[in-house]
Image (cartoon, rainbow, N blue to C red; front, top):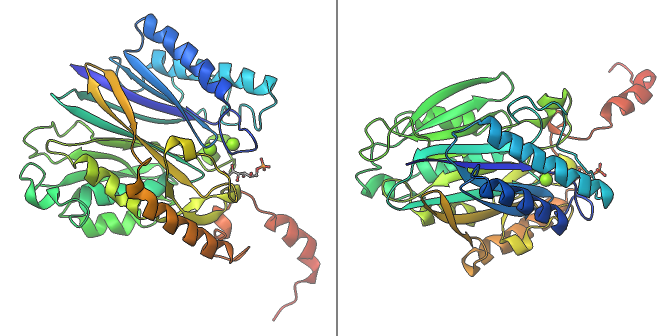
Length: 370
Ligand code: F6R
Ligand code: MG
Ligand code: MG
């Protein structure tokens, strides 16, 4: 049976500030998705809050980019926005940038990750949700999961994975994409995705020779909606989400989680303008406190059963990730000591907030030739 897993998220108001989602927004989303389940639109759903982002995890049989599903997500965010406004939550409706739903939420503000696939006998899926960072933050972990044998021994010792994977990489500035196959094109892939603010991994596919999973069926997908391109100006980092399938010819659950034991540097954090470590946390710790962060990632794991979501298990709510959290705090201390200096503060062209044009205007007449 073909199942679609849709993870659609938006920041429709924070509390306090940009730190977390108010429970009443989650309740509203539960109510609306619950109704859609009763009506048979959804097979199943879960609602979560990660930082200030309201997360809708939904299963159905309607395929990706489906109008009815996107409309449901849009209406849910609109309804939650009304509550956010009534409570005067911070930045109510912040991610609903355009008020013109026409079949699809793509380009309207929310972030979207969707996979359609034939549900296997055992189908483990992981929903990753990051706050206070950008889609390129997934480049390093997704590369490690599907391309790096030092992370994923299955690439070497599981014959079904031995032929490698195909990475779909988007150039989010020029709206172009390229497909690169590992291990053959590993260096080309890394040359691009190391530049994570421009080249982002959008999807991963099994190789054409994969014995179990059809090559056209993506096994991982990352949201890549760039808010600043939607609104015509930089209005925010678009806190990304991702879906990853695991096991039986794909990386094992533990191979999928392993990259997050390293709190790598990502851009975002305070005012979308700073580099900092990404901290893996359970839902209870998914609130952005210190310097509006540090950026965090939550992983919810499910087994699918005819589209039903069995779970979640809150995968980073585990002492095995205490070391990564401790290291993230140390790195946060270290980075913070740079104050307004790069590379803690992002380079000028990547900052979400900048006063530079105004400062230049003020100092215009005072610059002397040297
Ligand atoms: C970063 C983020 C926050 C805000 C900061 C200032 O993505 O959401 O760090 O940028 O709290 O917010 P405003 O300008 O709304 O006061
Ligand atoms: Mg916010
Ligand atoms: Mg957010």
